[in-house]
Amino acid sequence: MLDSQTTVRLARLLRAHEQATGERVVVVTQADLQGASLEEFGARLGDAWGLGLHGEDDSVLLMIDRDKRKVFMEVGAALQDRLSDAQSSLIIDMLMTPEFDDGRFAVGIERGARAVIAALGGQIPDYPEPTRQMAGYEEQASDDQVWLFAVVLTLIVLAIVVISIRRGSAARPARDRTAERSGGRFGGGGASGNW
Image 1: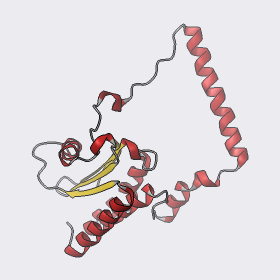
Image 2: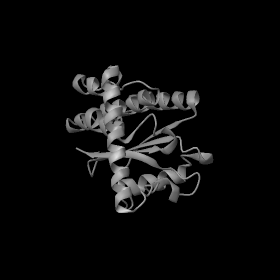
Image 3: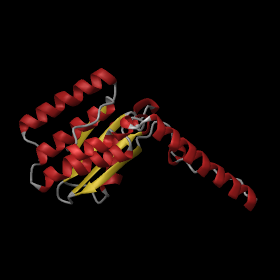
Image 4: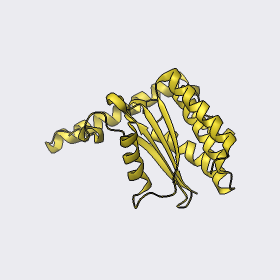
């Protein structure tokens, strides 16, 4: 899937990012999943390789299975504030799979890895123009729009509280998926896609 030049460029890029930030971005092209789903194999691989060492969970695992035409990105919990599930999906759907559809696997993988590093650095990845405009929309919101959103959100929360009180039941907090895991385990959020 990767030619030697792309492999060297990716290795340098990923190594430089890890040396500068301590965050590991790992790209895996896998053919034999040993009977597991891509997600299960990725979690096992992350644990085996020590991604998320010392309880930090500050790694990204990007896996591509060419035979099953699947892409999977697992983002460690410590990086979710900078690389959300939605951003992961955009990277896969807008930058990687279009290249895979055209048989340009090396280009798609490199674009995906560069976009992950850009997002971790607080930048908007180089999406196609309409998507880039949507990704930057939050920055363009005026004070009036922010104020209106806050008022509407407050009204919704108040309505939920009133309904909950009338029914006589207290709102229960949602379960945290990561609370069920032991410390240091690799995992957080992510996305997957097909082409």
